[in-house]
Amino acid sequence: MAAIRRAIGLMSGTSMDGIDIALIETDGESQVTRSVSGFTPYETAFRRRIEAALGEAKAIKSRDERPGTLAQIEEEVTRRHGEAVVTFLADNNIQRETIDVIGFHGQTVLHRPAERLTVQLGDGELLARKTGIPVVYDMRANDMMHGGQGAPLVPAYHRALARHVPTERSHGGAVVFVNIGGISNVTIVPLTGDPIAFDTGPGNTLIDQWVEDKAGIAYDAGGAIASEGQIVGSVAARYLAKPFFDLQPPKSLDRNDFTLEDLGELELADGARTLAKVTAEAILKASAFAPETPSLWIICGGGRKNATILKDLSEGAQASGAKVVVAEDLGFNGDSMEAEAWAYLAVRALDGLPLTWPTTTGCDVPVSGGVLVGRH
View 1 (spheres, rainbow, N blue to C red):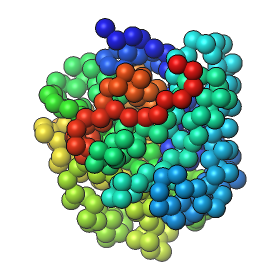
View 2: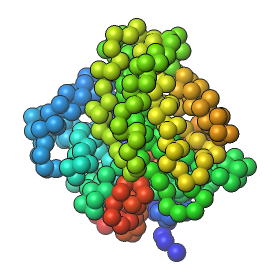
View 3: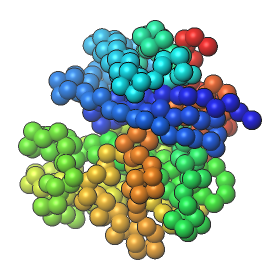
């Protein structure tokens, strides 16, 4: 029987709003005990620096290049993660020595699967020194070396959580975990076989950019702006006609693959409403790639707090007799799930267990990954 380890997971996603942190105890397989979690926000000025760095990252040709300000931002991202861990341990009265490993995602600034190139800013060795805890980082690269897309990696954890969903909620059918971050992705957990996973399209990223550009607001809290607008069908159809949606999974997106260009000159609320519809419809399109019709959609990530997106999802799923719930309805934590996943993946990496499968990223064979640094 595999050893139970205490692991901390750190996630800074495509929304670039800060650092999610979570503690779990797991064997890296079916045993998962979720514990405390937290969030350390990035202030607006630092978020804007990361956004500027995305432009600089376009010049990267190999994974170790850090042009422009990227080296400086990488050090600062790592330092902030280290401070987040130290504060988290202190706030929760956790002794550093009781933590076996940290799973460190870092900040994605470039993701080009066709070129087998993915770059997450984050210095694992520096984080291990700052925290005094072993760190597993750079978990996407090995998948790409084996022909995979390098994303998504959370499906391994979703599969473990699916085992904790009561049958009366799933009706014994396929369960879909939906993460609505900057980009939305799904994990379809079928009744038999490996999980199926892929990015579905824009999540919050276009809505965030739209309300920031138009109104200087960081995001559409609760979907309130969208709730006052009208769907502009021709614009939604333009987004949903993109070739990406017809691609067979596995497939993944860079944050810049969808832009505001197709939105045109809409009014603020109509733009937000139309983009919310695009996000929901893009997610629901995923059911076409499921081996059986999903019976339950579990919504995670920041986008689950957008009531307009949730309404569109619920109405769309209802057409096939499926239910839509948010993670909390099942006792999960939709804010910390990705951070929990990174803790879970770090433990799997320690044991050489697969982080990805051909059905999740398109890798040639199931592969483990990550680089381990620090005391061990």
